[in-house]
Amino acid sequence: MDGTRRILGLTMGEPAGIAPDITIAAWNRLAGSGQAFVLIGDPDLIVERAKRIGADCPVEVIETAAHAPKVFARALPVLTQSLSVKADCGRPDPANAETVLTSIKRAVDLTVSGELSGIVTNPIHKSALYGAGFSFQGHTDYLADLARGHGFAADPVMMLASGNLRTVPLTIHIALKDVPAALTHDVIVNQTRIVARDLVNLFGIREPRIGMTGLNPHAGEDATMGLEERDVIIPAITALAGEGIPVDGPLPADTVFHDEARAAYDVIICMYHDQALIPVKTIGFHDGVNTTLGLPFVRTSPDHGTALSLAGAGTANPSSLIAAIKLAGEMARHREAAG
Image (cartoon, rainbow, N blue to C red):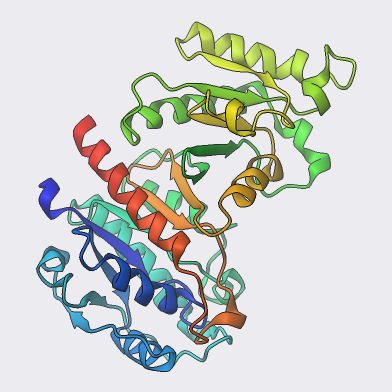
């Protein structure tokens, strides 16, 4: 795709949440930026929500994604995906589940076909989707399944980003007591390989500086506070070095995230969910971005949920979505350059 015509697809997300609100705000902030995106969703929902929150957001329905750059400066371009029932702020309706899921699937189809350069996903309300056959832990697993349906290998890895801070949790939505058993040699090596590759291909970092935390306090302190560092993490780091992927660690997690320490790394790979997410949400609560590596296409998302209680109030902060759109555009440029 010609870099001057790069287009991102924005999924509709949960229509009863803040997705329409922040989409409207994002278009208002980015209309003059040159980074076009097209919403795959219901144009009437946007018109109604804009009126409710008192925002100016002209909408223009387009037939193909290629038309998005032509209208983006004057209106939010929309590829229509109509809701089954009118959205009620704060009250997700399972009747709209199929539309929400189709928006995501359509974004993947258009990206795989080359009509879009990447996907930015608005937050979904998973419990409202289960009745439509949604059986995944979240967006990421669903996207990986869709990619495999197109014949691609997909081994998704979550990366959180805020400014120059990037973190990767090797384990995600599992109980803390289950983390040690889940941290196998293969998990550490395979996910770190993907991170190293995609920092080159999607972020343009030729020689990624990778740090890796330990699991235990003080990174185990010479195996006096736990054995995972000695028995699993250090052997994995050694194996990665043998593949030409240098990793610094295991590092004590309580000292690696201050300004000077984290400046030494392009990414810090962490052992579990909170170890990776707390620093990002502390440093950049409103502008954090959830990025998925290991997919055959660019995907980012705002690092927050549907915020049902804020829907239609006009107070939702769009900063995370805006950051996600900007980052997706940058990643798409690097991906194109990498071939």
